[in-house]
Length: 436
Ligand SMILES: [Zn+2]
Image 1 (cartoon, rainbow, N blue to C red):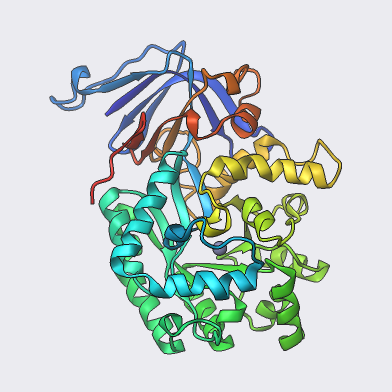
Image 2 (cartoon, protein in one colour; image 1 turned 90 degrees about the vertical axis):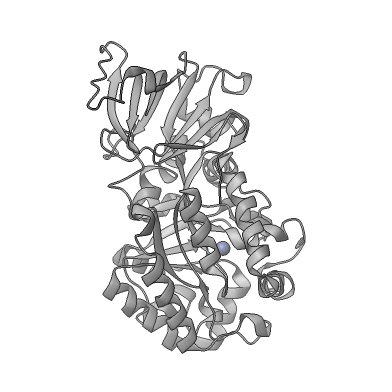
């Protein structure tokens, strides 16, 4: 049990009429949930319901109104498995980068190196305030990731990459259509909803160029049948889109539509190069977009039409993508770049507010990962996934006047005081509580 006393609280609101509620208050955390919210004028009245719940057993943290509580950041596209290949795949466009570096690296992973990659990723994202991810694994060793997430108590949605048709991939990454589906279903049955709902499975057909039409269709049917997210990449780089057009006669999203491979459970990373008809499809299917601005810039992929998506009420989340294409997993980079990129490239300083970016990593990220009933807002009975930010720093001066701008433009991982997942501090004051 924790009493988080004398904090500023910034809570996303469900309606866009008012993006956030911002107030001074205290949170009482019990059994992994936000049990009670007090505003500063309220009298704190902790009613012990059991003998052992005396005020002495309550761990109190006094924020002294120098710290701010926000819902734990949600990353909607990441590759935990790629982190050991950080700084080893530079100066290449997407397809060359995949063929020469990423796929051979992924094929070489063992259960032990996978574990190292996941733990390194976890430390970095917990230290930057992230409490939940939508992750794309590789073809093998996905069970290693789930087991670590379960042991640590991290909120994780993900699945093994599916690649049944990829002539350029090394032998270690190729699989038959049947194997790809059977292995995915085994993992789904074993881990979906486990750890009291912290773990969720997501089908992960990597992208059109690694998947047969039969696989993509089967995944959509299974997603409908079992109500599971489909997590994939599309329309990332012009070269990729041109190749799909040349071989199929369709744009990337149009081809998925032609195969009947899309549904409202799709979360698609990048979505940069779409024509008007494809953008309509995104709206019609209510597809969610995982925007990865740093990775898109670094691989020279382009800039996604995020303001247009937001105007059309398309759900947009943020992700750092993999460590080899970013090369950081710190969500603050994406929070800052998302609005700056649009303002700069459209010569319009009013485009994309910092509030828009913060909603992407909180309430909208929760909707995209289908956990909005559990996390993404600060409300009584929601699960306690929180980031505690130290705002008494030079780079966040005047944060009381404009907290969203202070977090998005000024703050970074140095401001993260603590990261809590379901009522447990997995990171606090530079120390991790990761036991596996
Ligand atoms: Zn990716």
